[in-house]
Image (cartoon, rainbow, N blue to C red; front, side, top):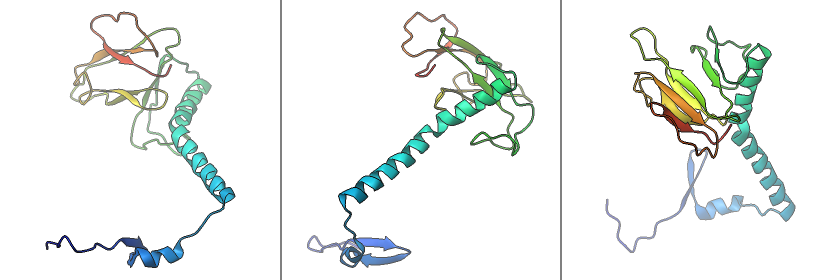
Length: 174
């Protein structure tokens, strides 16, 4: 149905499945003191900090668990069975076998070699930085398209020439 240009649209506010006009909704409006606004802003910032920091905390918890079990940086950590409730990482999938490359590029680039996908065995996932942001996907959906590849993870600000035959992944974390 076409509306005439002269038709005035009413603002509608949704509350618990009911609609009301903006004028009716204004009766619920509240004025906050400067102190209340500051408290609310502090609370919002605290919540945002937790949400923002969660990936780095999760990465560190997984690395600490690997170290506590004999692993170290620049090793591929392999969970030989799906995780259960004893695994205290933040977001594990209970039906996934995990491989985690906890790389450390403070001393220079690190190479991760992903084998070619086979009919009954494939590595699918991503190589992430310590914020758990993907640098690149690996496997059939990744840069190597399932053919396997050598990935060269470079540290922040790395400017040296990289060798041929590598998929270069500049990381913004070490």
